[in-house]
Every structure is written in C-alpha cells, then in structure tokens.
Length: 97
Image (tube, rainbow, N blue to C red; front, top):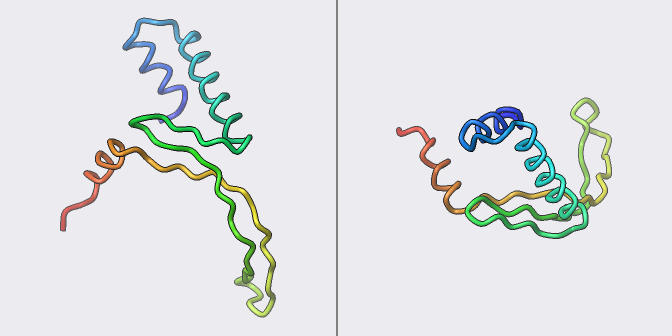
C-alpha cells in the first residue's frame, strides 16, 4: 500500500477531498519524522512505537575480500515495534504446517 492508496481509501470512506486527506496524512508523517529525528519515542496506541536505537560499532567483512576487516561505526537507527493488535493480525499470516 502506498501513501496514494491510503489517501484514496480514506477519502472514499469519509467523503473528504483527496487533497485534504493527503494534507493531513503528510503533516502526520512529518510530525512523526521530526519527533523521531530529535530522538523522541513516538507511541501510537494500537498501532506501534517508533524509537531510536544506537547500534554498537562492529567489525564487518567484505565478502569479496574476506581477509580485509572493515570498521563499521556506531549509528542511530529507527526501530518500529508493532502494537498488540497489529502483531496478532500479522501472526495470522503464518502458514499452517
């Protein structure tokens, strides 16, 4: 699903103009991005939590030249932890043996 698909669905369900829906969605995403970029945790109940984690420095290997070690510096990454309802819905996709 793309942002455009989301706009069309919400617009059809609410009878709002697509431009208005797009504006609200874009502002929401902008505010979430800005908060995470500041290192804040963003918690959306029944959806999930966005947070910043710091990965430790480590030594990597180039598969084309395994004798060469490459230092990978520490870095900040965004982590998303899905909410309970989303986890339960996604687990239903697990194929039965």
